[in-house]
Length: 529
View 1 (cartoon, rainbow, N blue to C red):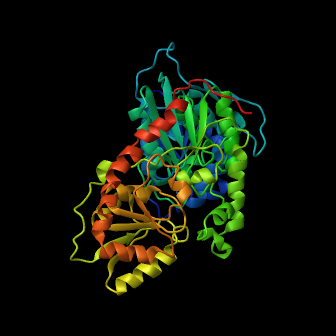
View 2 (spheres, rainbow, N blue to C red):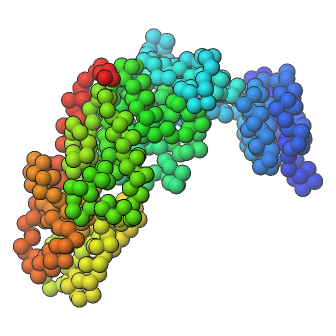
View 3 (spheres, rainbow, N blue to C red):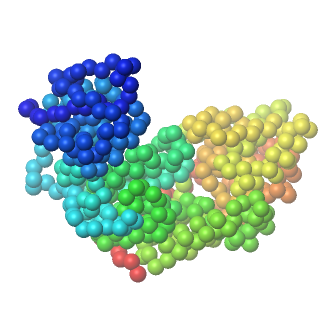
């Protein structure tokens, strides 16, 4: 392909660096950091379709990033070898826009045969309307995503104008995101497409700055650096949101980023606007609240005498209550189904429906029961020490261990893949003694046929279709109950044996699919009140 390419090397130490005069047949020009201004680079790019600029220092890369916002055809790379590869790709027919901004979720479409124009596909519609710094630069439409061109660089505009979503003709397509706490977003997606006929499903996880990568299985994950780029979110809408007929939003967290061009998260209010935009585009929307996002600490302290939130000094109650109020406030008047992941959350989220946690019971094969002649093995593995009441648990169980009554196993920050193996090594698991719910670990404990101990309020227990095989304990009764189990394990044997069957009936995905099915089989969106 006869393509006009210019090449420059920017920054670094010409005396120390080995610099070729040509790269992949293209002659290079050298620039100092101080002279690599947008104006100089624009002048170099004149008469050429692409300017490949190699940053040989951090300062040079900062200069090139600034220039890329205004210089057409500028491709910035960080090494001589990257420049050589880039030039070869250009010479082989790949566009500068596709090299700089390849489709994030479906890169294979660059290599596929063209799709007939008659096939329904999703498109990007660029417009020139002015938007404020925190204005909605992106809008979801029925068959396209509208993007304000002012927030994009020249190459991003070129890339966006070429974006065309792959065809999707699914009658019911579910998208879940953006949290995937405890892997539940992915698990609910698998449950829906396995147990609801005609449904396909995907989940998206937005990673935090602290996460090096996804801990739990996920269909798609986006790291913060990629999410910062506007075209990442354009691709997210084009390839994930537009093909979806149904969106399940986790914890009222925004994941489209339509209000902030730099990818900042605008909280529950922004998530509300995204939900309303999806409704206007004739997509069904629902919300699921996992736990902390909607569990009022003040109300919990009023309902549960041993609540971890009763001591305001131990928890950031004021700040957390404000966040919870914003989530619950954003739900007001939003005419969409609301789900909660645990039964106790029905105390905190009005008019919600239980969406059972999903585990894979096949991963938790019951091990042989404990042997009477050895000490009882008791495990505590909290995800949050304060919320689970771990201070009380450690105090009581460490004392029983010291007395020779039990063998106390204490774990923290355990990778999810290790949990099934650890459960097979113990007899009893104390999940929590103060929060009042039956969450992921308790369900896994039951699936493994181990005895599950945790605080479970009588009114919460009565909400279950069947009585959960969980021994209710609190900080005042934990020692006595564990002592009784250690002295008379046969008394609790049948309760532990009932665990796997309970886990299969309510937590293998079928019950979750049943909860989602009425909403999933609706095609058209509702409206906001």
